[in-house]
Every structure is written in structure tokens, then in C-alpha cells.
Image 1: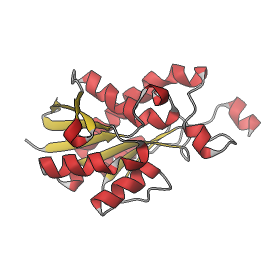
Image 2 (image 1 turned 90 degrees about the horizontal axis):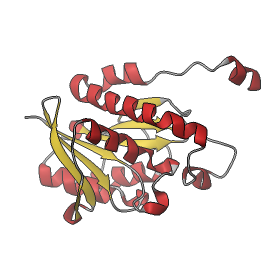
Image 3 (image 1 turned 60 degrees about the vertical axis):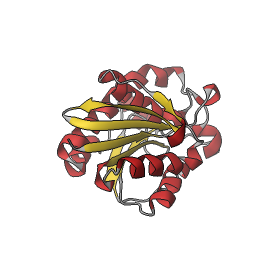
Length: 199
């Protein structure tokens, strides 16, 4: 059975639980819930790990329990221990340069300043892995403060749908590969008339 490693990025602990930077955690948790998989804390991997069969594949879901900028430690430990092929690794991360509610799936692309992705590249010694970027938008405020801030009430109402779509895109990536998944996921949403007027 083909093995896959799906990694959700975020910061551990109650302080960061509902911050924008933890959207990667949320999407991967939704995938686990959808397939009735439970996370267990695995100290040897520095991560919470859920394992099970998804769509006929042997899938490992991990949530690194280091801080965001050290996420690569968990990724390389699990990859090496399970001998998972690089092409079967997907990292799910928030992205402030992508509008809220939008997604981008790519492989072999830049970390674009994302500390978690940068650290993963350092440990894997390559950027040649797939990543699902989940948009959080960007307000006119300092980036670090924005990503560590909590979602607005309006954003919270949309989170379940975003998490479901993210989980579906992960499934599509496993079944059909990055190109077909990207064709479905990398879509710009049309602005409402009010938003167009404001901009």
C-alpha cells in the first residue's frame, strides 16, 4: 500500500490554538476527523501523529509540536523513519499573500518567507515537495502580529467550509497528483460588487 505523509503547520499550545498561523493544523485535523483518525503524541517524532487508511492509501498525518520555525525537525524524523518518498509528502500551511478562502497547490516552489516551510526545506535539503497553501489574506499591519492574531467573527463562520475544502484538495492530490489538484484548487474567487467598489 502506497504511503503518504501529510503535515499541518502551526504552533503548539493553547496560546496559539485559534490564530491564523495555525490554519495548517486545522485543515489536517479536519481530514483526520473526516476519516475517524485520532492523533497521539509521539515524542520521538516531536509531533502528534494519526495513522490510517484514506482512499486506499496508508496515510500518516502529523502536527509538529515544535514551534513553527522548527517544523522541519518532525518532518525529517517521520520521513526517514517511515522511508516515505518525497513525492508523497504534502505540507499544509497558511499564506498571508493569498486571499482568505483561496488555496494554492504547488510543488518545488519557494517558501516565500514562510518560516515553517523554510525550516522544512533546510531539513529535507530540497524544496521539491508539494505544499497546500491556505490563504489568510493580509491586512495593513505588521505580518508577525497579523498571523499570530485570531480570526475575526466573520472569518470564523467560514472556517468549517475552508477546512472541508482543504481536506478535499488533499484527497484529490493523493488520488490524482499535484497537477490535477492544482487545476481544481488554484482558483481566484470573484469579488462581490461591494468589494470591487471598495477596492
